[in-house]
Amino acid sequence: MCSRWSITCLTLATTALVPSLALAGGDVGFEFDLHGYYIIDFVVFFGALIYFGRRPLAAMLDQRHKTVVAEIDAARAFRQEAQVQYNQSKIRLERLEEELEKVISDVRSGTEIECERILTEARQSAERIALDEKTRLQQEAKKIRDALGRHAADLALQLAEAKVRDKLGKKAAQDKFMTRAVSEIEQMQSEVRS
Image: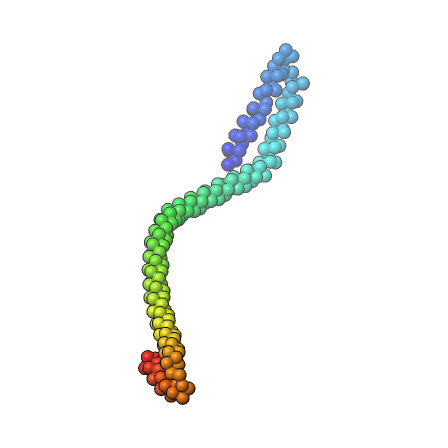
C-alpha cells in the first residue's frame, strides 16, 4: 500500500512540475534564483504532504474503499432480493391468472346451476298456484251451485205456496194444506242439504 501510495504521489508531483518547467523554459530561460526556489518549495510541499498526510489519507482512502465495497455489497444484496421478489411476483401473477380463470369458470357453472334451480322452483310454484286456484274455483263453484239450489228451492216453495193459495179459497183448508206442504218442502230441503 505504501509503495503504491508513494508512486501515486510521485506521479502527481511530476505532473504538477512539468507544466511549470515548460513555462519557465520560454524566452527567459531557467534561472535557479528565480525558478529553483519554486521547484524546491513544490518538492518540500509534496514531501511534507506525503510524510504527514500519508497515514490519514491512506486511512481515509481505505475507509472510503470499505464504504464503497459495503455499498456495492448492499446493492448486490438488494438486487438479489429484488430479483427474488420479482420472480415471486411473476409466479403469483401466473397463478393469479389461473385462479381468475378458475373462478370465472366456477361462477359461470354456478350461475347456470342457480338459473336452472330458480327456473325449476318457479315452475313448481306456478304448478302449485294453478292447482290451488283450480281447487279454490271448484270449491267456489260448489258453493254457488248449493246457493243456487237453495234459492231455486225457496222460489219453488214460494211459487207452490202462491198456487196453493189461489186454488184454496178457504182459510182453514189453506192453513192445513200449507202446513203439510211446508213440512214436505222442509223435509225435501233437509234431504237436499245432506
